[in-house]
Length: 377
Image 1 (cartoon, rainbow, N blue to C red):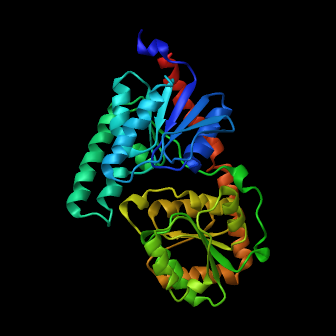
Image 2: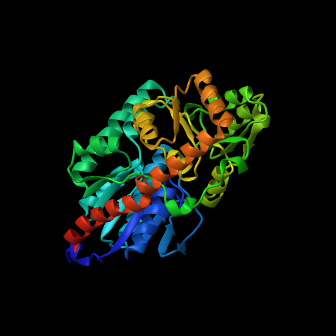
Image 3: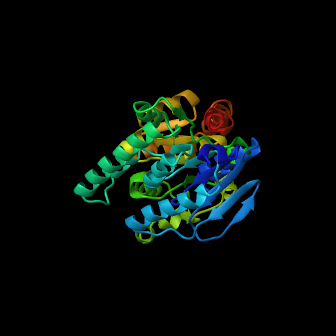
């Protein structure tokens, strides 16, 4: 029997071995959004927590993924072979390490879409933790796999305009679906006077995301807190705990979506002072828009794209992430002028509600599915 005739319409599978099962983009936005639109959605993960069904999404677990490079690619083929048993109308995958397995899946006659969250080749090339020769090898390897995959796959979903532009060089079947927040997760915002005397940062905690600069600037403001949440390497956490300003930090670890909203709603300023690495310059950090939705002014790195967003929204300031003087000056201005901070917070929230939210992006995702799936029936 021909493979295509065996496909059951409207069954779709999402595949990831590298992300958590409740990843905000994959599960909270895409899978739940597709389920609400009437698709039968199965999410395949590799975390060892077993199967479950939540809000119309079936989660299937292939067992905990390995950590070595070889095991990661083996896990890729394992999850793809398992998902292929569903004979779904569309396979939507999220990890660059799944590229070889999903190219194989496409060669078997299935419809496949690649969700490119990051510029992976550039991320590998600029990774400080790898020797130069490995960085070059990974850059060429992932660049080649992405090019071949883009040519073969039924679509590429890009998380940023920069990634969209890159893939459009290889295929016209590229669509931008930005990772903007869901407004309903951040309903309402506290008034500025009722908030804690605190800055906040929620997200992955690394040196190139500005944690050292955030810690240092606390020394300029006795009594000012930093509400900090997100994953961090144990070695770095130990190093941070020895910093003289660690006493002013409330570190909450990895927290839920509901807890993120609570943390933001009790903070006065949101920080996004990433270093100017190539793969950050064109990124659209979700936290920037989440800060805005919670009505707090933002202080962000002075990347061209981010300066445009902050200027359009009127939601805050951009600074040189390496300039303690600039960062300190902007923090002081917002703390000394709560009415300015309140106005910027309101302007930022309005900007996201009207322009940069998931409700607008889900229609782009559905358009990709509507284009691909009829051709596979």
